[in-house]
Amino acid sequence: MSYTNTKTLRLEEAERNPLVLIDMATLKSMLNSVIGNALQNLNPKDVNLKNGERLNDNPDLMDMEEALKFLKVSKVTIHNWKKKGIIKSHKMGRKLYFKRSELLDAIKRQKYSLNTI
Image (cartoon, rainbow, N blue to C red; front, side, top):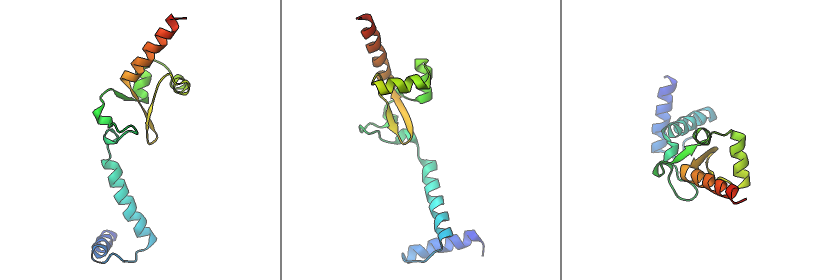
């Protein structure tokens, strides 16, 4: 019996009897398979932001690389602007997103504040 057949047999057995003993290696393999499939099917644009908006509902959302090109500045500058509160970012997992409209507003605010000095 091959590993695949054993795995299939154990899955079928687990469906019939929820209290089945399996070894740690098989459990890890099963979890890796299930989690791996779920992660492959995950589209980050379908995930909700903290404020309840969905990424795919907002076409002006940019990731870090797009924001760098849009603003024509370095990554360090973007991080400094975030710290100073000049621009807002939206974090999802380990990735940052920026709204084009918020970046444009920040640019307008900065130009206005420079003109009033």
